[in-house]
Image (cartoon, rainbow, N blue to C red; front, top):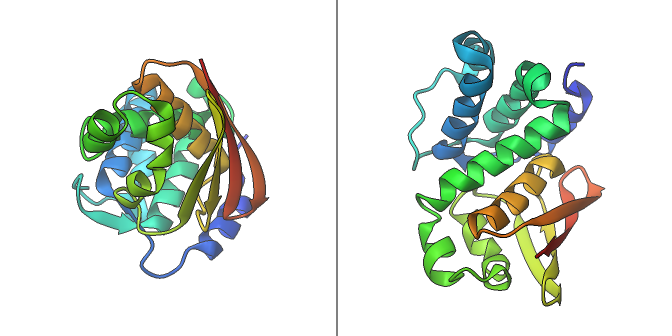
Length: 193
């Protein structure tokens, strides 16, 4: 089943001029596509505006990243699963890549392996990755918390992948469940063990 183009259009409408995403996230998603769908899948996804030679540290339009995510969902459905499964896989891949590059400071030095410290610094981490949105983390227990995201138009399943992927980077198991508050807002209940 093709990805939800009505939802994509609504998310694209929420993008403001200047909203951007680091190139390493584009490259990471493209790598996932190539891994599962080969060069033919990669060519399908890159058609049109997505032919840039992305540089890790440069930023590119958030509109293009949204388009990339939804195209990846179309191409990877047979190999990875439905749209939300693809978005989660993209998020996990992206945070794993980020943690070994620009996010190394946040994952290694600031958090020192502590998820509470990692999520408390989530606004700083996201600010190194994207130019838009606000994030506020509130601990709800020793192994849980809620992350409030506002003005972030990426699909909630993508952020669930980022958050559970971040726990994996810390060698923990956990979950992140989104409660949508609108096309560009959601609250994420995060738990780990």
